[in-house]
Picture 1 (cartoon, rainbow, N blue to C red):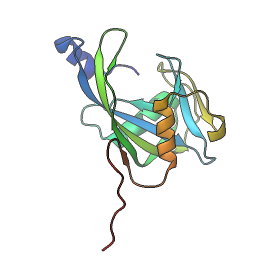
Picture 2: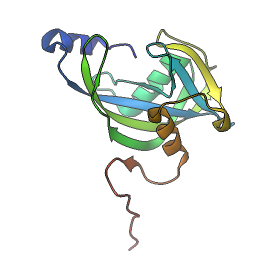
Picture 3: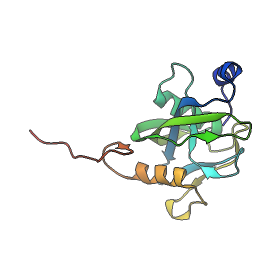
Length: 164
């Protein structure tokens, strides 16, 4: 993921210290039930689409923007499926970050999937029974997006709403 300008500005002041940041992941399905994936330029791994919100940007807006920027696909967010604080990561340049990820299920409504920026090496639609190798992060998000029910919060017991 490309580093937004506001993060570069923060890094000029704090160096490589841990930054707590919002993140948004988009699990995008088409009308055939396929999922949109991108092979990341930074790791070479296939994953769901994601990124960092711009200051003041709402998570749903981030999902729409990131999917279009990276894949040229237009989407409509349908719901939040997962909220999770990720483990801290340290990048090769020494920068440390920890993300609060909000994952949204999205529906494709237009555009043709293609590499649309320098963050992806490949982009494509995959049937659920023919997914490429995925890490736990991407696989868990796809699995959650396929499940009906309330938003999943790590560490919380899921409780059914009461009637009456």
